[in-house]
Image 1 (tube, rainbow, N blue to C red):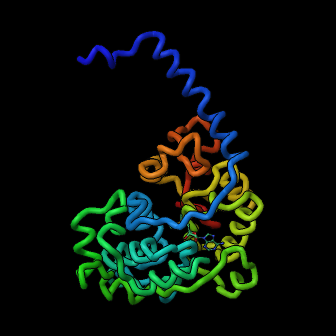
Image 2: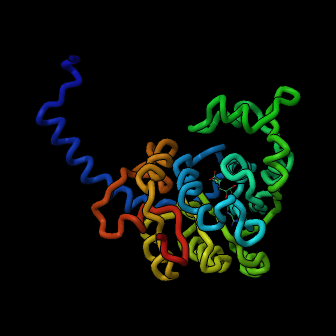
Length: 284
Ligand SMILES: C[S@@+](CC[C@H](N)C(=O)[O-])C[C@H]1O[C@@H](n2cnc3c(N)ncnc32)[C@H](O)[C@@H]1O
């Protein structure tokens, strides 16, 4: 045993104090740190969220043959950045539900990232940014073209990209109802009043059976507004999905507003607080 690493009563005491102080520090960070748009993404960012999608969400929309019970699923991905999220979603759906028809319409406010997304082309470094990327994923999703990686046509075909602003209530209402709505790792980058407006615009796209994916939203706001808008959180793999996000964002806690603290069931509202998947219809 390395004796220099052994904890003494003093270091244990200091650690205990630090653990007590960190939530307060994070509360202060959330209240005072300016929010900033961040143009950053990863492929396959939340594998456990995809597991919940496969096991709990899509079964709501398909029959015993794996066919949609309502025509092609309408899926909207906001804050799509350079396209890693909608392409990862298309790959997940195609590979687990080969008979399912779906269309993904993806939006971002930054024109340049939308232009790159439309090409479906990435450098090896961009793809390797993903915390949960392995060779199997790369070989399944991409063709190697001119020294880069190009998303295979079968995963590009169902995805369209456009410049779009979640805060523009008029253009949001012109989209109409969607079965699945994604707006991930974006609301916490907005000042509180704008995050609430965006959340309300997103919820206007939901029909009773729709499902909203909302990783990356301040947890106090998540509790308050999912309750106010009568959304039910999916209580499945909540801790695992939270910990997927901590791989990338855990180090930012408690000095960065985007930091992700440790999972805990202490709060009476822990499912609503740590949940990332919500629906206007109760989960079975
Ligand atoms: C941190 S990235 C998240 C990308 C992706 N959703 C993910 O989880 O990997 C945030 C993205 O949100 C976009 N964004 C910020 N405000 C937006 C808005 N009002 N409407 C649409 N996109 C927005 C940014 O341009 C940026 O590309």
